[in-house]
Image 1 (cartoon, rainbow, N blue to C red):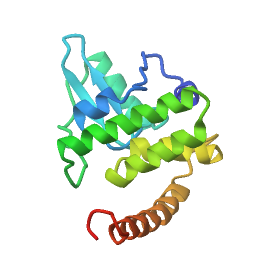
Image 2: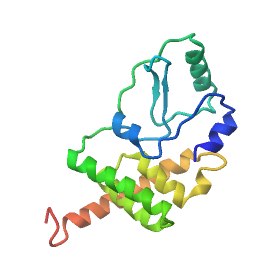
Image 3: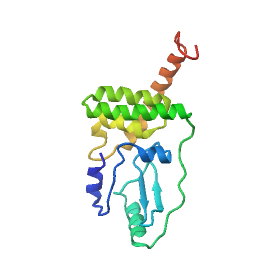
Image 4: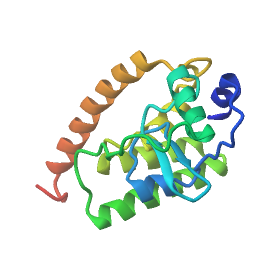
Length: 178
């Protein structure tokens, strides 16, 4: 998903893609795309969660300044998550996320989507997972440009559906909360 944007922006620095969400786990990222820059000494000099875009001139200029040493770092980053998951919930979400990718690699896109949607019920603000779903279901909303207006509308639709599903589960016989 990243390659067309990197190519279009004409970046000349190395770009790594975290397909296992290791950085998401480490930093608590719940949105994509993210950018992290580490200087040669191993110090993080830049973190941007959720709206990193190498096609944006201001971000390209900032990264170029960091690389050239004209700037040492950017302001401290703080996580955006508005709630905390229990360790058990975090483990379950991570398991479902990984299972979704395994299913996708096995050619089971529909099963991957179901798995990721289950993870979203536990972690509804996790846009790393949500955007994986969207990209599979609506690739035209990401190429050649990302349709951010559609994403806002889609999020509102999905939030309503998720609330209804959770309410239904809570009131079903044999379910917790009944």
